[in-house]
Length: 149
Image 1 (cartoon, rainbow, N blue to C red):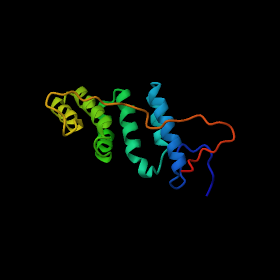
Image 2: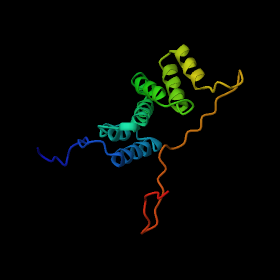
Image 3: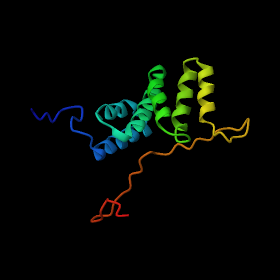
Image 4: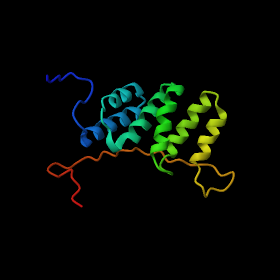
């Protein structure tokens, strides 16, 4: 077995720290409008374990940012199914946007309806708070990054 340091994918078993770093990088690229780089980071994740919903969400959002709406539908659908409600609202709203751009207004409306809380009043508008999944905090020198709680 050779060690190829120029490999474009991680071939090691599931490593949560490595996955989180890749996802944080992908999210950063999405935030600054570089979806191609976000997809490159996501493609380097071989085994995502419990982070798979986030991988799917970011992949769908990156494809949507590239205006590849038809391609974005499948990963956004998977993310919407994997995240429990109401945490799937971000995926559902992105999915609705993709359906609408594809001329599938009925499916777009269904995705918006699925994103609405069950206790919402008829005619109310959905407000989705889009916040970064990963918040990277700066560390003081000499302090541990581990949470000792």
